Image (cartoon, rainbow, N blue to C red; front, side, top):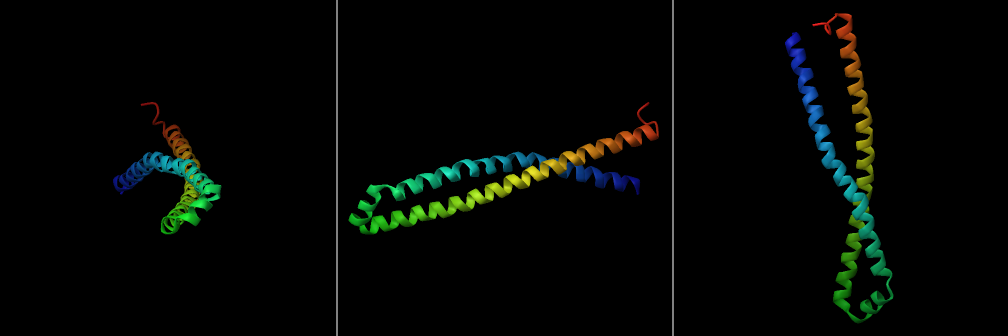
Length: 122
């Protein structure tokens, strides 16, 4: 029973370590959303509000319509990406705090057990 318990704990520790490694990738994605999405929104808004854009819309019918649709899609997609990036960043911050707390509790428990049963003397 003790070996099974140790295997489960070891497996959980390995699983948590793998998630912690993936956290770096997810953090990179979150930062890209926080940087690239506002940039795309800013460029799209600049293009839409530029005075020459109105001239383009009036002179180029089908192309202007396609450009307007594409800029709208960029705005909506970037907005969604920005919100998702913020949520992911908050989630990762929360995960990191809980993970650090878990590591501290685990180390404290290991030290307590070792000192209680004099395992650190060997």
